[in-house]
Length: 542
Image (tube, rainbow, N blue to C red; front, side, top):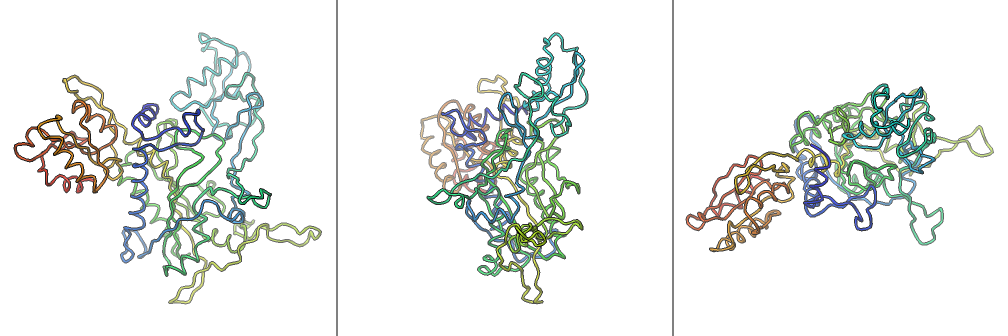
């Protein structure tokens, strides 16, 4: 599937629009249209239903070590600045960036890709920002320009090695930046903090500085004790949250995959340290199954355990659920969700202050020398001082719970389901001529519109019957009524919207009170009594 076809469909059918498009747009920000907002809402509702409200607190689910409870939170986007200092985001939430001194453009160090090429006795690392399908073509164009060659001279280019990211290159003086005219215009990489800074209050002083949250997780950790005291949950239990997060990405790219404003679906699952490994494996496998149950299956989806050198300093294990998005190079996957074993890092950090790993590999409080007393130290960032330990009411044991964190992106999830759903086939039109049909094969739970109702013609009482069916469906879920144009074109419009079922009121309806139901994917058609239509569709999309 070519990505530009999906992007075109998303705008044409109202899934996604560029933010502030009438003013030229704003890079890294996207608006969900009429169909997109329903798709994303359905995705979030499916997640909340399956993980939280529909969870059976009394049963031991398959693969789980024991029964557990689930509850939820909705925390503020702006929190006390100390939260981000103790969590490590203030110091460590950075990407490495490089600037082009000639074009004044900025790039993320590990996302600028290129390839070594030699001509006229010189060797240059040519880079590009082109998408995967155009990457090779753009690299050749840039290489010809670097050596002042014409297209007919392409055989003079001696390519060396595969396409790699810029962070694999030792000498940036040999790098040829995108859109630059000269070689060697890139600066050395430096840190760039991704948090959006803002001001709270009217004074606007340094003391009033705050940040838009870069993740929803910290709101759960700082409310751990509040949830314990107010809801009487017992370990093991999970706290879920959905909400907006913000990251000032250096180079937003690949449609909605990497945006500056996005929505997360996160769970912080608290358990006894002795049971944490089992719970990590449970959540890793359960979250993978959730995607496959909703239609992300086959070779494009994978579960990948992180190698030891990929793990965060506090992590005891992390796995990523990844999808092979069409805009990525062949064989590469992009992260949909991370499932992390975070140990007791987060709760301890908010009790004590910022934690770091010492020479023995253990977490300890980060300290700095006291000014004027070099032999004495103080915590770099002071924790809350609150007791966030858990006391088992049966055994009276006190401990700091370990945390398993399944963290999913709602926007990335919606994009993956859109990519997976896009399908083309050949079908006859109303005149019998074969034409390409574009169909979005979304799972019925995710489909923005569950059913569409058509009167075959606008006479003989057919519109009145169709409208009555439409109103009955509308009480249960989103439905659509359409009486304009040939019925074949109406089917095509609903296929592109991902509507699983179309219901047609025709001449036979007037004789036996039945209608035609058409399946989007198989194109199978069958007849159902008018009085049974709502129950029929509801049973198929629930």
